[in-house]
Length: 72
Ligand code: FES
Image 1: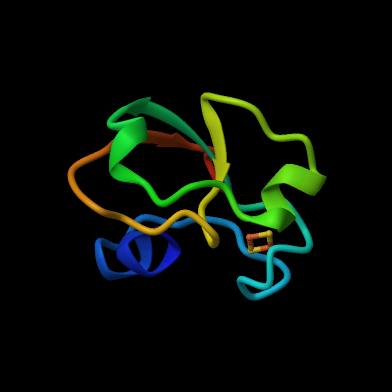
Image 2 (image 1 turned 90 degrees about the horizontal axis):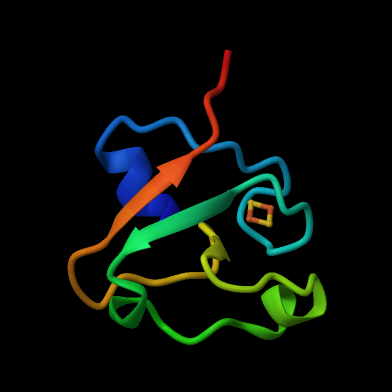
């Protein structure tokens, strides 16, 4: 998801560089939850629950619609 966002010029915070440690890449999945890979241990540890995922951990399997935090 993070790579896709970058390729689409969508700014998604990723303080830890995609290691699943910081949580700043959190996204809200609006549509297509089933089109993402299952939550990773890093996400489970952070107790993220639907509709939230870590953008650096969720891999795309199909179309999704997500909301990302605005970066000023
Ligand atoms: S970039 Fe740090 S948890 Fe995703």
